[in-house]
Length: 215
Image (cartoon, rainbow, N blue to C red; front, side, top):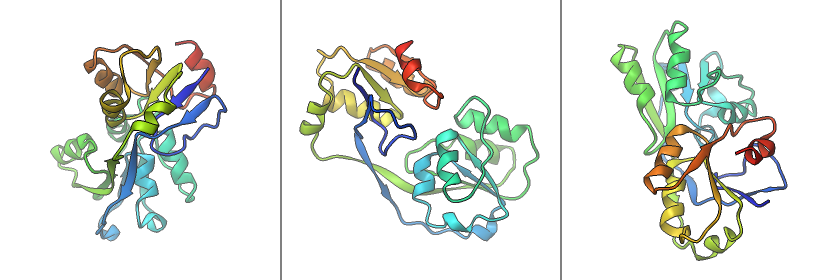
């Protein structure tokens, strides 16, 4: 069983059945920020953590991550982040924040083009919030060789809307028998726009291979 994960960097899980084939690259962007202005730091993705230039300067701040993958990256720097119990999304973070008291100014760290739902919600509730983009996503100039690597795939995992769009624009020919897997309902909605079915999986399951087999 050949499983392809399109995540733009090596997955948090290590399974010999899963091959990581990114469909775009992550590039750090210029960052100007004064962390002294912020009490709460929210990371929307592992890439936001990996590309944040002041990651070692977050002591004594409340740190929140959108999901387990982001939390795992933060732990590499010694931070234990608050994470939604189930819904690993903007809504999940908002629900988490609504259960506790939020004091001080908040900084949402994300990528260019990423969702701004959290900052918009907090600002609408008069909770002063800013955003900082630490990276952008850039397509490759050519997908000919990458397309060949998808041959014979039983499953293709999509972790972002952009990876779905690139796949159907540059990889998909219409003759594939691969089953498509999405890491969230939002990604699944994008797959549906291409008139394709998919299953939503718990990407951070303790037994991801078994979960994939059950789809």
